[in-house]
Image (cartoon, rainbow, N blue to C red):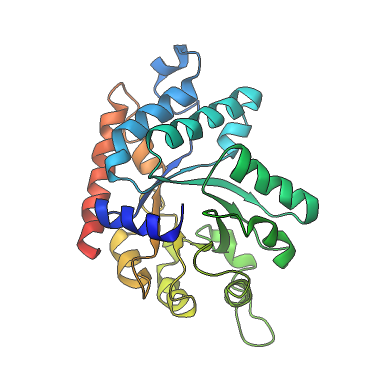
Length: 271
């Protein structure tokens, strides 16, 4: 999916909502566990209920890999269902890969060609060698971890370098030279709202994927106010637990839709 298509969907739905499919067998409604593939059936119900409000879906691969082959099959079925039924919706493999050479190229092939995701999250600690294998795929995106929302992110990301930059600022400065805002995005945590305005000045037009809204405490208003791109909205705001686990009962899909609708209503004020 190219940038023009992504922005058209944002305008049409008046939303920048990304729903994280962090599907945990220990948290989904118990009645689903009786089905052959409870993870996929849960995902399918969430997708069908929330797609009207949603720009992107982001399966977190840890929840699928933890279930072995069965979990991987659930992931394959989920992305295939999205691509077949909702091809206009952006898909993110939240894999946080970051290797070099042939290994990096195989990761890119796995997510872009085999599974047919639109994008994949990448840890850029190994530098350009760990990012460039994911670039150059038409309509595909690399999403780099820049400033994350977890407390331990400050262990490295906020450390000052000799030239006066913080480490995350150097990541932005260097990586923004490797690819344009047509194929490179950044992860910026919503709980770091005080940094979003500064980051937007440094990368004025790149899309920012912003986790941490909802269960982690970030607010839509802060992100939308400080994070909009100069040439458009340029944001994807993720909510996972606050939507998919809005109810643990048989009404879980309806509760997810209600939660997604509330977030979309907040977002539309800024679009």
